[in-house]
Figure 1 (spheres, protein in one colour):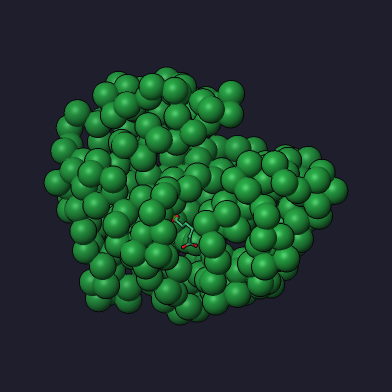
Figure 2 (tube, protein in one colour):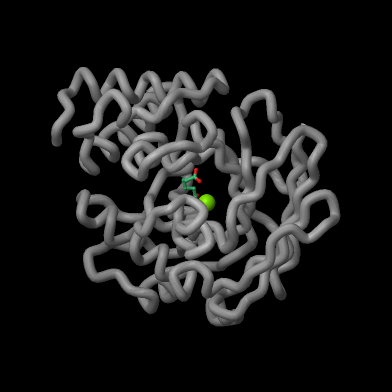
Length: 262
Ligand code: 0L1
Ligand code: MG
């Protein structure tokens, strides 16, 4: 690690304030170019600790930058991981207040809910499918705290991978009832299809993203607990949304899930 405890605390406080006040900031590596991966995840951990101190509960995790489209959009080559707390969760069909966000975008995702915990190292797609209770459609609302979504990967990790809100819904399926590689998705904005794809866009198989998350957490002495909801990553590029927009994600054989922005 290259940053001291005071700096990590200060950066966590700064990024979380930006999140809570819907205020943007230049990327933090501008001032701290020596920040390394451990520092970045340590800042993310501190943001989580601040939320937990105010009563937040971790309900799951997310993998980000897992599709080639998204990696290309962001000019990066490695997935990143973040946490989901209860306050990020939005009810199916509910309204998201855009005034609480900076510049929201939506991502169509396949969500996993675990019936058994998963622990790396050595976690693989088979272990993920065996531990999965069901999969279902999910829309992630990302909202980078960085000005104009201009960042590098370490700054993104520190910022909890732009996590802001998410909704899951539709028709849950057991993982053996669907081929997650060929399952088709359509994301509609205001009734118009704006992004299409298939599950294999996520690392060849969305369960691969969950295995990578388990292996990442395993390196840090943590596991994915049973009951967690995990967003496996955007199947397509993220789509910008604004007040008045209605977004609906349709996933083959899994129904649809929607959100309104006001
Ligand atoms: O969930 C994601 O793929 C987002 C990762 C962070 C990068 C971004 O804000 O687009
Ligand atoms: Mg995402």
